Image (tube, rainbow, N blue to C red):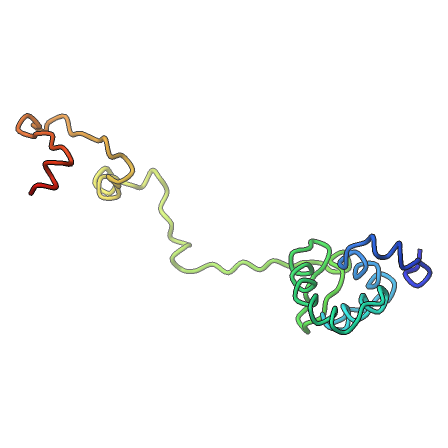
Length: 141
């Protein structure tokens, strides 16, 4: 069904991103945020003030939607029309990662974080001369 042939009442039931998606499917050409939202506002017969108040929310909706992709030229298009190429760059540091088998006992001790295990007690440690102090006694000092 064409957007132009839809009743305003039916369009109002759709989200701005759904209307934008349908518009891009019909026009088959990418558009920048402002022009795309202007078309959505025209279809819904929204006023200029509404356009200005809602364009930021519309942009956020486009960026979070899985249906749209922002092209290099700053225009939005439907993701289904494009192949997303993921390029992974490796740093020199990442190439020389050590495996768990390569970690020695000394390195393992050096990496131990005592804050993770506050109840850790060394079996060889003598704690007999320690005393328990209440909060009141601490405040007196």
